[in-house]
Image (tube, rainbow, N blue to C red; front, side, top):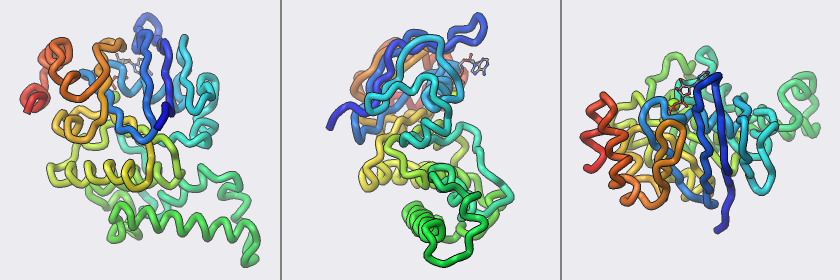
Amino acid sequence: MGQLFQVHNLTKRFGGLTAINNLTFEVEEKEIFSIIGPNGAGKSTVFNCINGLYKPEEGTMLFKKQDLVGKRPDQIASLGIARTFQNLELFANMTTLDNLMLGRHKAMKAGIFSIAGLSIRRSPAAREEMANRRKVEEIIDFLELESARDVYVANLPYGKQKLVELGRALAMEPELILLDEPAAGLTQEEKEEMIYSIRDIRDLLGITVILIEHNMQMVKYISDRILAINFGKMITCGDVEDVLNHPEVISAYLGEETEEDVNTINE
Ligand SMILES: Nc1ncnc2c1ncn2[C@@H]1O[C@H](COP(=O)(O)OP(=O)(O)O)[C@@H](O)[C@H]1O
Ligand SMILES: [Mg+2]
């Protein structure tokens, strides 16, 4: 095991607002690393900087020793970093299978357009397309999405839609996956299913996970280490128990209106 990803002195401002303030952390290979903090703490902004949607004012983000700062989202994706969004970003009028195929094509050099005109069997493009299809079927199997395979995403329950988004990220065969509140809006049963899926992603696929999650039960159960932030700054980073029992972490959450978090933080 070694370090896969290092964020050093990251700062991101929006006008007068410093959303990320001199943040430094490292993620080990095959770790499940969680980022927690109250609403507006800057968690999603960290992901938006990592995957190139936002350009930070300061800092470096080294993925396998390459700096991500200044790279476009598609370049960062092809380096091996995939993500899901806090609010689903799927094609509702496409099936599960087609959404996953699209995720796959985004990661592939040939891309969907160079394949479109070719019908000759066993041409390199056709062979690549078959391999893509196999990979996507594997992921459908892995996430137990068989029954959703040919269903329009709009017609799936929310929990399944979240799994399809996860599947689309996995279709890119990333080394690092960024999950932004994967359990938000899920039923208890769906949350448990999501926890097992995330575990399996790390244990069986060997993918490193950075998880943003508001549900403290999930964070406590699944994380190897936790980074707690507030106002874009690190409160503390380390082992699960140490972080969740840190007085500033507890008071940051007590300041929030949502009772669920206060009640579950030390369950
Ligand atoms: N594109 C943006 N433009 C302006 N302000 C933003 C933008 N994105 C996020 N912010 C602000 O940055 C802060 C952190 O937001 P965010 O990262 O979404 O928090 P979290 O995900 O922890 O709830 C908030 O004050 C938010 O309003
Ligand atoms: Mg967020």
